[in-house]
Image 1 (cartoon, rainbow, N blue to C red):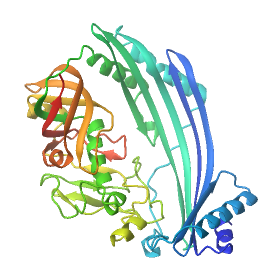
Image 2 (cartoon, rainbow, N blue to C red):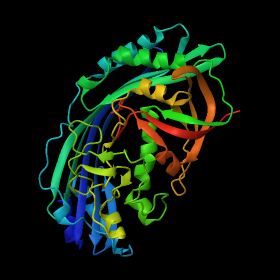
Image 3 (cartoon, one colour):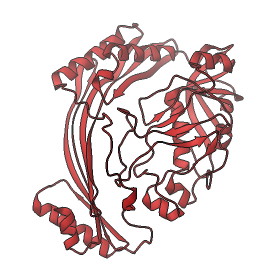
Image 4 (cartoon, rainbow, N blue to C red):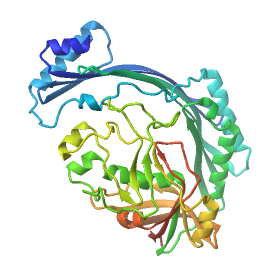
Length: 430
C-alpha cells in the first residue's frame, strides 16, 4: 500500500523497510530488581526518489491514514531536495532473489520471573567467589526477537526474523589499594548457546579480583597483546577506514588502499555474512543486495572496499552488498594454532591489554592513543596488574607490526578475532 501511494504521489522509485521488535530486559543489583523493561515497537521507514532527488519519512503508526501521510511527507521532502547524480535504488541485478535460511531465529521462552531469578543466580555466584567481592553494578538478562522486511518498486520483497539473547554481570572487588570493577557476559542468537549463568558471575568476580592492587608503568616501547574483546577494536578501525563513506569523503588514513599491502603477508581477513547463527549474519543487506563471502585482506593486501550502492556510485565501483556495514568480519589465526598463553610466551615481556578507555582514534591520520588497563607480563607469565596507562602509535605501523593472531576467537560480536600481538607500541605511564 505505502509503495503504491508513494508512486501515486509521483515518486519514480520507492523503498520501504518494516521492522517489528519484542523483548525483555531485567537487571538485578544486590539481589534487588533494579530495572524491568518490556520492549514492543514497530516502524515503517520510507525512502522515495523523484528522479535523483531523495526524501525519507518514518512512522510507528500502521493505520492506512498514517501510512498515506508518511508517503506524502517523504514525497514533499524529495520535491525540495537537490538532485544527487549518485542517488537511487540499487541495480536490480545486484539484489537477492533467493537466499538460505541462516538459522537466526531462536526464540527464548523466558518470562520476567525466570529472567529475574537467573540474574540473581549470576550475581550470587560472583559474590560467592571471594569476600573481597563486595559490590555489584548489576547482573542482567535480556532477550529480543525482531522481524525486518524490505520491499521496493523494483520488485524486491524479502524479510527474516532474528533473535539475540544475553547474560551479563559487573562486580566490584576491594583490595589494599582500593576498588576495581570488571565484567563478564555471554550473547547468542540461540539461548541454548549462552554460557552457564553461574559461570558468568564467577568470571566477572575473578576478573575484578585479578585487577586489584594495580600499578603504573613508566613510559616505554614494548610488545602489546590485545585480548580478543580489545583486538576487535583494531579491526573495526580498519573496516571503517575502508568504508565507502570514508573513501569518497577522502577522510581515511587508508585512502585508495585497495591493492596496498597494509598488513603482514600472512594476514587474512574475511567477511562471512552467511555464517549460520552468527551475530552479524544476514541474507541480504539494507538495500536488498545479496550478501556474499569475500576476502577483505588477502596475504596482507587490501582487496577492496565496503560499499553500499551510493558509495559505489560515488567511487565508480559496484556495491559490495554492505548497506548497513560489513558482517562477520573474521580474522584468520596465525601462526599455527596458538592460544593466548602461547602468545604470552612468544611475547616474553610486554603488556597484556584487557580494557580500553576513551575513543582516541583519528581515522583521517591513523593516529591511535587510548587509555588502557591490563597486566604486565615477564618471561611469558603475568606479573602484576597495571592501570592508568596510555598506549599509542599509528594504525599503519600497528597493522604492519602485527606479529600473531591467536586461536582464542571471540564470536560474541560482528568482528570475530583472537588475541592480537603487536610487536611494539608506545606505552605511556608515569
